[in-house]
Amino acid sequence: MNTSAVGKIKMRFYELGLGRTAVWVMNKAVTSALTAVCRQQTCFIIQRSLDGRLPEMHAKIPLSVRFASIDDLSCFQGIREPWSRYQRIFRERFRRGQTCIISFHQEKAVGYLWMTDIPESDKRLGLTITPDAEESYGFDLYVLPEYRRELVGFDLVSRWLTHARSSGKRRAIGVVASQNQPMLIMTKLAFGFRRAREVRSLEFFRSFGVIIDEKELS
Image (cartoon, rainbow, N blue to C red; front, side, top):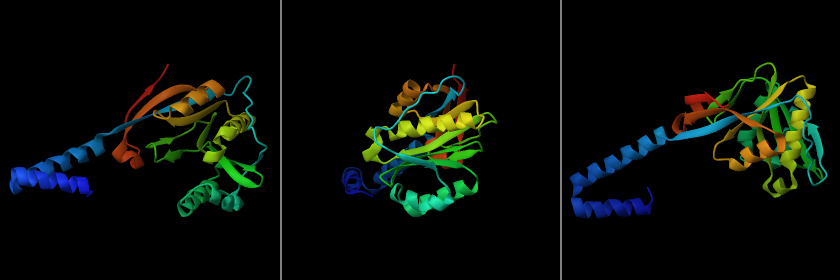
């Protein structure tokens, strides 16, 4: 409990006495718990057809790009922390046969993007995406902050779309949180993604994938 909360309790104790202060504290605790449980979060399933011309976006710096394998796990160590956690996640993704594109600048790993055509759970957003046979799901795009202005992320998305189409997929899909307006704008303007579905879930239960509302968007 922080010092400001302790101070408020002391003030209530002096004003109201022990009994009424205890009731006040309990009411505050219940209100906080209900807020945590009932807080909603919204995300959008975005979609783009892979028919026709695909936009080609290139980074402003020279990159070396390749499809990573489980032998490349050590390359990710300088990108994501805590590494012990991400190492387990990435190892499991490789084991399941998911694909990762990784970008290097002067032999330093600077960004990556995962793609899959099998179900993938996103505990941050509280839902599981199950691509159909014609879809490629792109997820967990990450670029080191100091390289984001170099369009590394654009380059990775462009390569994903090209690879997905060459693999016989007809649609590319992704998930973007509603508060991530820059990503929603970027994917629409630069790559032609549209919002296909809106999904609302409960923040408190997001790791369990509790969806309270889902609707198609025109």
